[in-house]
Length: 142
Image (cartoon, rainbow, N blue to C red):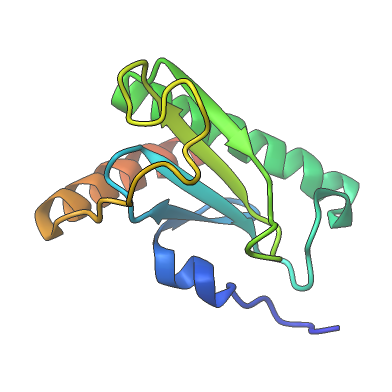
């Protein structure tokens, strides 16, 4: 068992840190096709949801709701998909993805559809700044 939290290398390679919530790092997936955030609880050695303690499960649920609400408001998403798979990355993490009826994968899942479209520098910077401000504000109410 490791006593220090470390972000899985695959998550570090595929994302950029937006901000920190009360429990989790909030990361932006580097795929401009979708508003796609990933929450990673900052606790060592977590693999599955049931590895979290009761209080942390409540906090994560509140963070997911806040992130989902930010995505809906900021991007006018038709709906949000929330998923914890972990088959490729064995560190507990939660995807929150804004979906639209005209997105490339609709109505199916986003995984395995096409090729990720990385953010260009300006678009990525603007999206990070907007999401950071929205999330910092949303997390103040948790």
